[in-house]
Amino acid sequence: MSTRVLEIRKGVLNKNDLLAAGLRGRFQAAGVTVFNLVSSPGAGKTALLERTLRTLIEEGRRAAALVGDLETDNDARRLAASGAPVRQIMTHGCCHLDANMISTHLEGWDLAAFDVLFIENVGNLVCPAGYDLGEDSRACCSR
Amino acid sequence: MHELSIAHGLVEAASEAAREAGAVKVNEVRVRIGALSGVVASALLFCYDIAAAGTPLQGARLLITELPVVVYCPHCEAEVELPSIQLFCCPVCDTPAAAIRQGREMEIESLEIEVP
Image 1 (cartoon, each protein chain N blue to C red):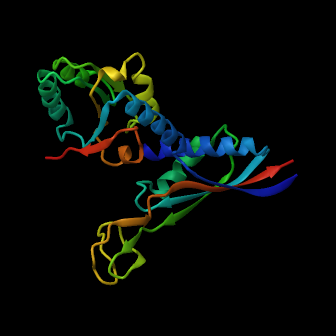
Image 2 (image 1 turned 30 degrees about the vertical axis):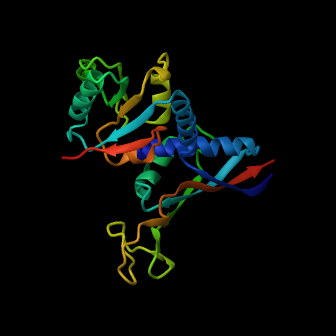
Image 3 (image 1 turned 120 degrees about the vertical axis):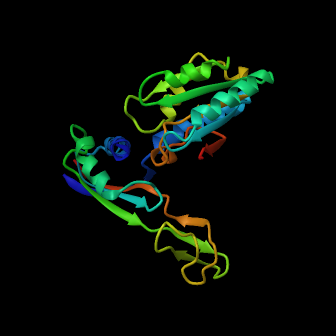
């Protein structure tokens, strides 16, 4: 038996980063622009998206949303009233979305059918900052 | 809550590396955490034992090196260390400096393992 030191130099979130890079490739190939919407709780992410989705759909743009929350599908139901395809991601207590949650919730969706995809993160300005979701831009909502 | 999922990611990545290297035991894990990573060392240490239980990392020491923020100051033409994460100005000449050169790290540096 011998002891040795193994150099790793790998990001702790390497797995998430790899998955996010894969998602980014899929989004680009499908020609969909993706926004990751973050804010503290209650800042108005859902209200902003409600209005934005409605306007985009009225203008004939193909917009969709994934919406993260700890529990309940209240937000998805609110956003679905816009007519846009919306899916709820329930994290069951997890304080952020990660790339794997995005990947599993995209199943069955034809990304090429969307011009823009919004991902509403869990209301929290700490943890979501560490997790790449493959988005083009991260937008922070405040009031 | 956040540190627990970070700890799980850390344990998963380190266990995989240990397995690939044919380790029978892991004695020590060294990680580097930047001041801007959003990870609190004490909280990570607290969660680590829970995350490591039942994995090849169970019982392995976790050593955390905390890295301060280093920015490039365009006026001094040098990399300077910031005393806090509150103010992105050069501590020498007070020039605003936002080019981050260090501080976002959240990485596994090395593992000390036992091999047959």
